Image (cartoon, rainbow, N blue to C red; front, side):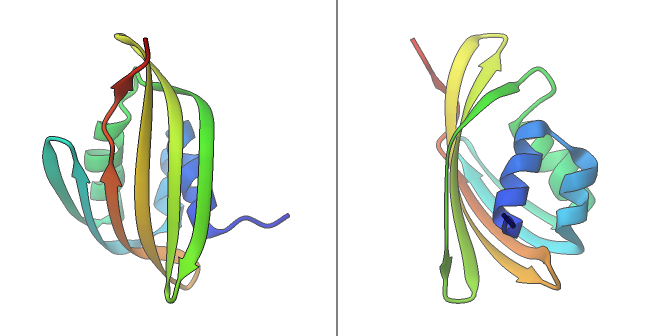
Length: 122
């Protein structure tokens, strides 16, 4: 079964696989994202992965399970929503994101993302 670019992104992000993430983005990428406390922007794949994505899921944050992935096409954009169970030094959390991607030559060239923030599980 083949997977879409969006599904490969979710998998690589959950594993914090820097090489796979960099391979998924065009070298110059148009990114904007929103987390509960901040707006984020990046214009390069390296900046997006190192400065944004690895700030969202830091080294001590371990995705223990991908709880949900849903994707579809919105005309020329691929939409993906995903939910992770994450173990952090503070205990278990759930985090969800919604993202829209534009693909060029099999790689993400444009990405907009909105995050729920880490929600503590009692």
